[in-house]
Amino acid sequence: MIGVISYLAFFATMAGILAIAVLGLNLQWGTTGLFNGGVVAFFGAGAYGTMILGGRPEPGQFGGFEAPFLLAVAGGVGLAGLVAWAVGLLTLRLRHDYLAIATFGVAVAFESVTRNAEWLTGGAKGLRGFPRPFEAAVGDPFLYGLLFLGAVLEALGLAWWGLERLTASPYGRALRAIREDEEAARAIGKNPARLRLQAFVVGAMLMGVSGALYATFYAFIRPQDLAPILTFQLWAMQLYTGSIQYILIGLVIVLMLLWRPEGLLPERIGRRTPNRTAGTAAATASKEATTP
Amino acid sequence: MIQNLADGILTGSVISLGAIGLTLIMHVLRFANFSYAELLGIGAYAALVFDRLLSALAPALAAAFRPLTLTGSLALATVLAMALTGASAVAIDRMVFRRIRARADPLSMVFASFGVALIVRNLITLAFGHRAQLYSNDIAFAEVVSRDPMLLIKPGQVFVLVAAVVLMLALHLILTRTTFGFALRAVAENPTLAQVAGVRLAAMVTAIWLIGGALSAAAGVFYALTNHLSPALGHNFVLPLFAATIAGGIGSVYGAVAGGFPVGIASGLSLMILPSGYTPAMPFLIILAVLLVRPHGLFGEARA
Image (cartoon, rainbow over the protein chains, first blue to last red):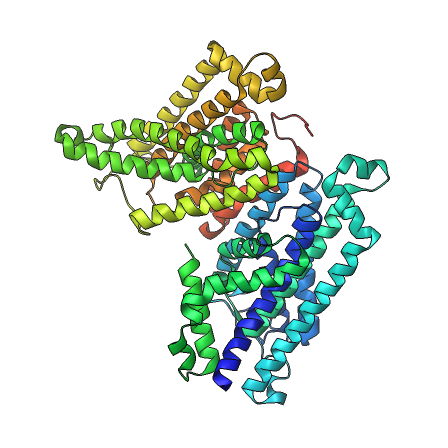
C-alpha cells in the first residue's frame, strides 16, 4: 500500500512541478499571446542555476557554493528571468514570430552550453545536486516524499493564485488588451512592448521555478532532461484546455496518455520495488518512448 | 583559416538554397515555419530511395562521374526527389497549414509547424533508422589545393557549390525574365496589391511551396553528398535557415541568398575559436546580432 501511495506521490510531484511551467506558459501565450519556442531554456536556466549555486563543490567544477536552498532557487529563477529579459528586449518590438525563432534559438544555444561547457555545467554527465532540504531531518523517505509533494503543490497553488489575481486585475486586462488589439491598447496609453516584456519575463521565471524544483527533486540535472521534446509536451498540456482552471485537468489527462503504458500496469504497481527507483525507471522509459 | 572559410562557403550555399523558399513562405503566409527545414530531410532521403531504385533498375547508371562520387542514378534521383519534395510541401500545406490559415491566427500556424516537423522527422527515423547513411561508400579523395596555408577540397564540394549557384541563377532568370516570375515577385512584395492586379494568390502559394520544396531537396542532397544523411538533418538546419532569412530580410529572395553565406562562413570560422559543440548556437548569435543592428535584415524593409 505504501508502495502504491509513494508511487502516485512521485507522479503527482512531477505533474505539479511541470504544471508550474505550464502556468508560466499560460501567462505568456494564453493571456499575452506570446509564442515561446524554447521553454526548456528557461526551465533549464532555473535548474542549472539552482544546482550551481546550491550544489556541493567538486574538483575542476565551477560552482558548488552550497548556498541555502531558497537562495539557490532564487538565483536559478533570476537567471531564467535574465535570459528572458535579454531575448524579449531584442525581439518583442518586432514581428511576432521573431520571438518564436529567438526563443527556439535560446533553447539550442542553451543546450550546446550545457553539453559542452564542462567546467560550468558538467557537460553530458550533468550536475550532481545537493541533499534535498530537510531530508535528513525527516528521515523517513516515504514521509519525505509526501512532504515534498505538499511543498510542490503549495508552490503550484501559490503560483496559480498569484496569476489568477494578476489576470483579474487591471494589469491582466491590459495584457489581454494588447493581445487582442495592440493599436487600441496603445491608443489608451498602454505600452505594449513593455507589458509584453514584463509578462514574458514573469512567465519565464515561473518556468525557472519549475526547473529549480525539478532539479531539487531529482538532485541531478543533465542535458537529456532538457530535450526539445519537453517544450512540446508542455505546449500540448497548455493547448489541451483554454483557461487556467482546466490546465490541471488537462495535465492529468496528458500525463495519463503519456505514462499509462509504463505507469499504471497492475503488475508493476503491485511489485514491491524501491519506490524512487521504480518511479525513475518508469519516467525514464516514458521519456525514451517519447523522445525522437 | 582558409580551410574553415572554404567549408563555410560550401555550407553557406546549402543554407542559401534552403532559405530561399523559407523567406517567401514567411513573407507571404506570415508565419515562422519550423517544419520547413524538414523538407531538406525529405529531399535527401527521397534521393536515397530513388538512387537505390534507379541503380537497381539500370546498373549502367550506377557508374560514377569521375572524379566525383556522384553517379548518374543519384543525379537523376536528385531531380526526382526535387519534384517529390515540392509535391510533399504542397501536400503538407493542403493537409495542415491551409486549414489552419482559414480559421486561426498565425501563431497557431507556428505551433502547428512544430508538430509537423516532429511528425516528419520521426517518420523519417521510423523508415530509415537513426544511423547515419551515405549515398556512396566510394572514398572521395581530397585534392590538395595548397599546402601553406593548408587547403583540401574534394571534387564533390566544388560540384555542389557550382550546382547550387546554377540553381540560384536559374531562379534569378525565372524571377526576372518571365511573367510568372513577375507575379511571384509581386506576391512577395505585397500580396494584397498583387491580388488586385489579377495574380491568383492561391496558385502563387502553391508555386512557392513547389519551388521551395525543390530547392530544399537539392540543398538536402548537396549537404548529404558532402557530409552524410541522418534523420536530424532537417532539425540541424532549422536555425541556420532562420538566421539566413532574418539576416537577409524576410521576403527577400536575394537577401536569403546573401544571408546564407555569412551564416555558413561564421559557423565555419567559429570552429577556430570554439569547440565544435557550440556550432549549432552560431546562427542564434547571428540572429541576435542582426536584430540588434538591423532589425529588418540587410535587404528587408520595416513592415507591421
